[in-house]
Image (tube, rainbow, N blue to C red; front, side):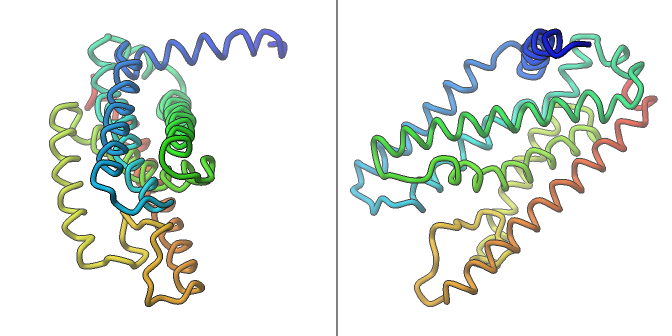
Length: 235
């Protein structure tokens, strides 16, 4: 395949996969994510709260989770509903080739959207480094996205996975109260350094947090990929 042919095939392949992943509702999920983001921005301004980089980071969390939630939770079920799951299992190393590419596409698209959202936040509320801000948000998004993907390969039900992911999210928020400001805190805000903590210790904590989220996300991804090897459980 020539380079020209590759550039003509890749966009079509991306559009097809995004249509399958989001069940043709990608635009509405982006619109919903921006709606929540706009509401959070309005709430910050209306309540006259202190607006800084930490505030922008905190309101980007939910839009990022929302964008990755549906494709990670309902992806396997969508394949089954569209009757292409059996066909995909005929692809050698399906779990790596198909879902590896899909997840990469999802995270790249979510990152680009978060960068655009951060640009809006810079224009309306407070100037930030949009690319770095979006990259920081992607660490917990990567963690939860791969966790949801792994659970979807175990439960094999979109609705069941959604309920379990929500319950786990609530439990993690409760757990965060006990590990706040440590690298175990999944929701740690790297732009909100405690006043009684040395900057060097804070930077070390953030680095350990990002390593923890990345390693855990890779573990969830590997478990989910291995689960897809059990063809008899899906077809």
